[in-house]
Length: 571
Image 1 (cartoon, rainbow, N blue to C red):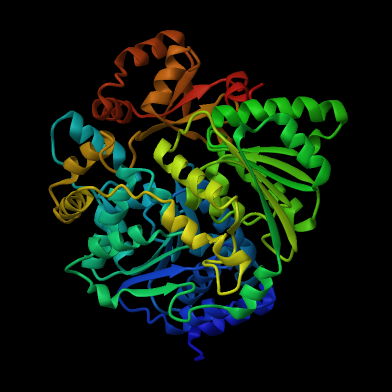
Image 2 (image 1 turned 90 degrees about the vertical axis):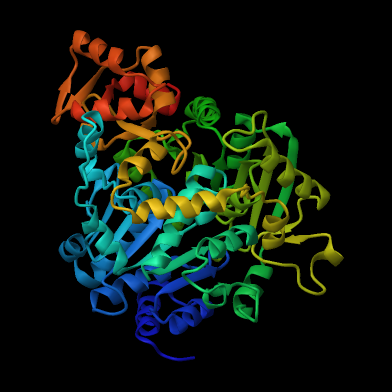
């Protein structure tokens, strides 16, 4: 084992904050050459791969490896969680004031580094890709005016793209993109472009299906030789941690299948009677809010509602952050909690529960959810998997395949072991989590690479910004339902916004839930002006609608507190 600067920084972090080093993290850091290329890191949930991000970030601050570290994740909740953990650690080393100067979180809800030009940046996939696609969010109004007047606007996108070119870009949990063809195309196009400009790219997750790994390698064809893609995949080529395996093998995570039944509020309350730390994951927000409302009514009658928490994407920024901090704190201290949440919990959210109640979901999602059970030093955990009536936001094929495999193996998945070793778990009756992911994951890649190559070419051409913009706003790349405008709550503007797409906006308008809008940081509540704005919005023309809102300077729409409580909490 060598002792690179990265390894030395990691060892000091471990000594100060984490207690014991992870052997394979040290192997990667010691062999990581900071040379242009693509590095794929596949490590089990709970193994501590996020420490790679923090280690690299600190190395940047002493002038090593790259000019900056850019951490990119698909979910705002994951970005916020990792940034909170970074500031907690870095402030003890550098001081809070310095941390704020050298690092920032950047996405639609927070502007901590608007051109990604701080040495350490944590950002969402959407925001990062907009910068890479020559559409930096701070300049979108200028692009909109150019679209409206049919003129060309090139902007200052090379500021952030110059930063990206000199950075190490770390993509965390990219498996979350496989359920969206638009996002998958955007991700692969970005990796191809980064390979072309000779950037350093790290792709890391616990659940990267081999098919997606092959797509990544194919996407950089001609720029990086496939043989030179550095892969650190747990369980392959001797890349194992015997101590970790022995510790995980000593854990008992019991899995119960209730696939013919839908989860009920009674199930949740009963679980909280037997376990202190209860995690509940539901696929759709509407169903989640319904369950939360029913559970709260029961716990209110028992005087126990103070342990109940709700977390999902349709919540105000500050409120979501507060709840996340409180639940993580309770988890560390062993205090009781019942957290009802959607898939925002799946990746990187550092908490440990005693029991998980979850709806059936695609295999990678289930593995990630189970990664929040007995995550630390606990010896026992329980997982209960329920059926669903509606597969949304996933496809029936993804759900059915995971359900079929779980039934075939009677729920026996070794959630912490990538594959079943010789003599383990009853002669092949069980599956390792990697085998489960590989056998039950659909990657819809038909014809996708030709689109990826074309999009990557658009990124290179200085005059193709409008083409990319139309592709984004039409749902061809990035999101099938493009995020259009943030939603704010009257009287709580400082708590941040909630990004909404055109479909959601249409529903809110049809139900007369919109109270007003924000222009130049002023709230406009006049009914006549609001009606005039509504008449101009046409959801069948997303590009024109987006351009109109930007040209008018509409920074967000406003709902009242009662509407928010109804939508977010079911009150």
